[in-house]
Image (cartoon, rainbow, N blue to C red; front, top):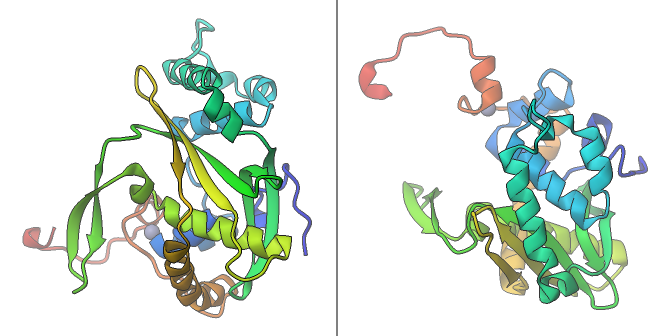
Length: 270
Ligand SMILES: [Zn+2]
């Protein structure tokens, strides 16, 4: 299998050879946009929020200096740090000042782990892997740790309903946790169901950053999330290998950018 390094981890070749949590989620959202990125026809636009998250992660794995050297867009024309990065520095300080958070972040940083799971090779990058304590830790930056947000979900009858949930549920972190835990378990050669403890160290983007250490260890939920991944994988593998035509979602950036009008819609249908 194609050997992964930190430099090629996010490359198109790596994404073609391996499934990842992000790619899995993108396949469920819009198959056409994933296939277009794999074929080099579409580049997902980068956002400052994404880069700020990467900056905080570079602090965690000790590559903050390199990050700054490679991101001149962190600075304004007057060479002061942009507001978003000033906030990020506050988030970093918040964690640095908290001994318990720093204790939880101890271990090997940015560890690449691969495993064959549900018919495909998967790659994950663990923010922190601590084998002595049998623990995986994920560092999350979020708007608020405690505030609940509205999301749209399908109820038991398949009807779309609004529900207010924590940031952990809104961003489907239990799914991420399940994929990371299972890939790590397989890669480490442990028995079925023998997962590591899973923690999230969260820090908020608020003026005075909030923080929390969240215990995500929940084998029952993990099994449920993995069963869903397993059920979705045959279709994803078929699309990714070109056996099935990718479906367009008609509402993402890629679908909007490549939309061709062929009919008129009635105003009541909007
Ligand atoms: Zn789409």
